[in-house]
Image (cartoon, rainbow, N blue to C red; front, side, top):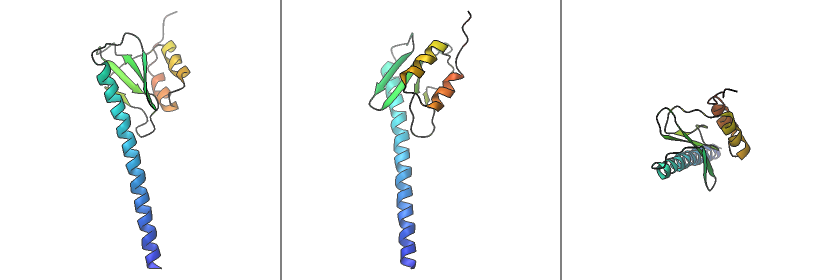
Length: 124
């Protein structure tokens, strides 16, 4: 009986470690995608919002009017944290840009909620 209990505990530990390892590798891959994207566009200032995809990863690039840098946001994170932006900084988007992100179908609900707080109201 003790042997079965010990074996059961061992199986739980191995499975838990494997799951945590998979989550950690997913998180690292997402950050690596954002860092690579930032590096690729570093010398190219974005004048308009741009979408960038590689494989299963999708990002949107937005120009920060405050710092003059490109800001990249992962649209479909699968690992915590569920909103990833590089570099950190302030930015704003128009309602039209937000609607384009929604229409892309690539953004998670969490990302959309975060981006919604950056919409600036356009005078009519």
